[in-house]
Structure formats: C-alpha cells, structure tokens
Length: 284
Picture (cartoon, rainbow, N blue to C red):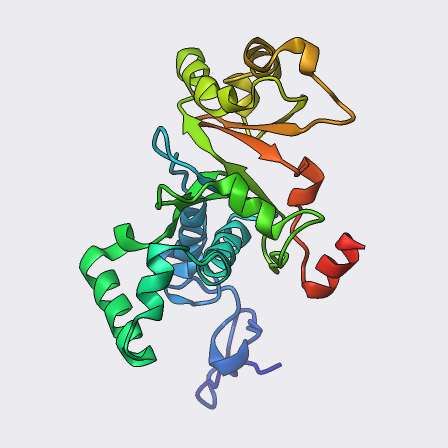
C-alpha cells in the first residue's frame, strides 16, 4: 500500500511518533467521510439510494369496484416487473373481439393503424389503456387494473392458465397471478355487497373456497367471514372440496378485498412458469 512520507529540515531534531496512513485507490484515505456523512469519500454517502429503493413498495389500494389481476413475486420490484409482463402479454394475446377487431382490420395500412393508436394514447393517456399497472397493493403484490368493462379477469385467466390454456403466460419475475372479478373495502357491509354481485350467478353449483390473506389481510375479512358468505349465497349443501365446479378465490389485504368465481381453474393453476419449457412441463 502507498504511504505518506513526512520530510523534515536537515539538522532539526524530531520528537514525536511517526504516523503511517494507508491509502486507498486514487489517493483517497479509506474510511474518510464524504459530503453528507457518506463512507468512502462518496458524495452523499449513498444514503439516498436506500431511501429511493423503498419507494417501489409504496402501497396504493385499488378503488372500490375495480377489477384486474394481483401479481405476486418475491420482491416489490419483481412484482411490478411481473405486472408489466402480464400487461404486455394481455395486450398482445388477449385481443379484443367484435367491433375493435373489425376496426383494426379495416385500417388502410399498418402504418396508419399504429399512428391512430399512438394518437389515441397521447390524447387519453393512462385512461386509454386497456390494462394499467397501478402499483403495490401490499408488499410483494402488485395490481394490474382491467379498464375495459368487457374484460372479465377470470375469463382471461382461463385462456392463459391451467390445463386448457391456449398459450400459457410465462414471466421471469411473477410467481403467481390471481384474478379479481370485483373488489371492495375490507369492511363487512362492503364485502357482503361484493359477494352477492360476484357469487349470485353461480348459485346451485358445487363450490369450494380458496382464501388468500396477504400481509395483515387476515385482520380484516377473515376466512370464516368469507366461508359464511359462500354458504349463505351458494348453499352449504353444495360445498365440494374434491370436485368443485366453481372455485371462489378471496384475496384480502389491509385496505383491499378481492373476490372471483373461477370456472375450470384451481388455485394451483395460477402459478407462473419461468419460461415456455416450464409451461409445457406443467401441462404434461
């Protein structure tokens, strides 16, 4: 290591102790504080970077009545990336039918079609998107909002998940994708209204409940609350653990409760494979 050498005038005696100061790379002493109290002489000490990293986990509960998809991952950053993967996937694979498909087909050219789409996005902004990632519901769980009233999350999920998937969704970041056909505040009266809206069309069908509580959600709408509501609306006699026709998925967090009635799908089908090979293996 480099050292600092002290030179004294000839003939003058020196009384004291020699001090050996190790030097870091670039001639800066190791451990010397920089501006802002940082280590290693760096400006700001890097403390601001840690604060910025936390902002990706800021929670933003969906508004009452919103529907879409909960994207769960091992970290907040991966959950947001997984939500983006899902949005791009849906925009390409889940093409709108009927009027929108005809309008796209009638475009005079590919260039004019793209120009019209860009103009629409510029004019409407985020509201013009079919799907919109709105942020974190809670730690490690992001929410992708479905903004077109004709898009039913469980119907779309059946196309990309489970044994009969047309083309399985894959992502390097998302671990699970949970459809939300309806949502409400985590209060008993709000949840009762939500349950009637989502479950009434399935009255008389064999059913089972899958209850998923994210960080602190169990302290809002409990599993017993959700099970009682299912029994009241769908009938306790039709509860079937082994051969359900409808899987009721209840997802709860401190500021949000979602409910879905999945047909031909189970909770295990909502796992996201890492790549297409994993998706093929899951089908087999």
